[in-house]
Length: 242
Image (cartoon, rainbow, N blue to C red; front, side, top):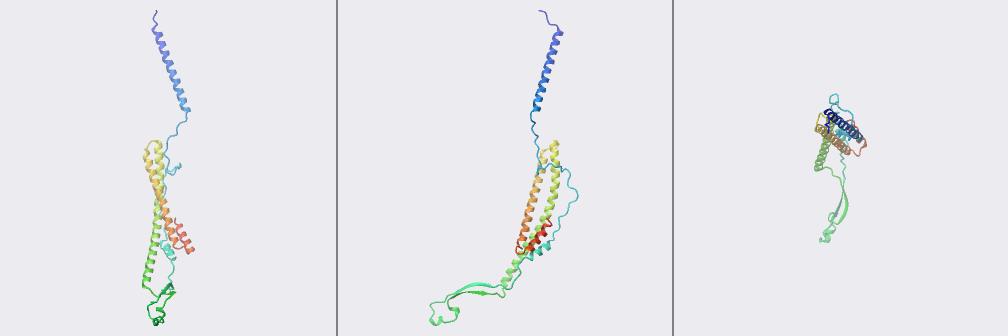
């Protein structure tokens, strides 16, 4: 048996290598086409707190605007006028009954009406009572204290809301920037999570301030429930600065 020449063996080896390479290449192309035909999963993206997508990379321009000035004294005087005016005509109506002692002698039965048995309605008009005057002063002081505290609370809440709104606009810009940095792979997700937590906290603060403002306003309006003109004036004074 004649030995196959070396050049034929080399040629056959080269052809086998070429055929294997072509088969691998065709298999890779087929696999790539099959993977491309499959739907690609959407990359996970952490949205912003409000779910918006509008760009907010630039922080708010301009300086911090001071909160609107509340006419505290005017609002205080307006509510104080709602208190009922003092009246010196304060009659009291009472039910009074009296029972005579049956052990008394017959002569005593005919005595004055104070010792006889009777029942009746008695009207009294107090001319002066130092105790009642002191009580009225205490009630008046308490009412004025409540009004002053709520007027001051309204002014404080308006200022707190102005600061919170400014801070929220800044943190929204930081949140949007961190979202883009995380999507580009140049920052960790923790950076965006911290910004989202700050934005959520400020949104909650604004809701709390709004609820406290409503409660303080309703308390003042409730003191003037019998005077609709004053109620409208109070609502206008507060609403103009909300």
